[in-house]
Image (cartoon, rainbow, N blue to C red; front, side, top):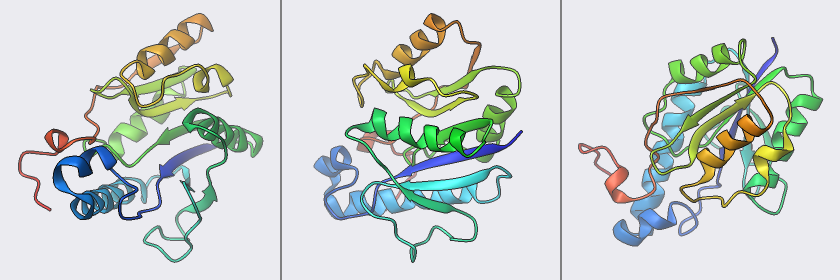
Length: 196
């Protein structure tokens, strides 16, 4: 089965990343946290066997820390997060991938085995979701393109994961939920021993 990991990545610009976090720790520390989380995401994905593509928010950086020999690179396209994710999945399925998972860079609790478990699930189920404690999700995977997953969602709110699971049910798809993990959106979400 041809597999693809999509990584959504915001270009690391001071004042433009982790803005909720920045309200309490400042822009510079928020950027440092974001770069730390991006490094964590690289460490858990670089040795995965599926193909990997990084989708940048603003421009594709060929000279950054994402190794060009490991990660393909592309630009997010669309008006909102839903359309951007839909187009990334659409491009993957058009290239012949049979199972695709998307992640971001916000979850320090995510690890390599969690992503491998998601792909194992997609050998048996139509979809897989990794719910986040804030009501969103840290991972979404599927074996076919379903536009419903990416429309009529209040992105960055506590209803996104449940609304997506509702889509699974309405479409009569088989699905598996991974363990609930914590995204880092605010200072309280950082590990207790975390230092910047």
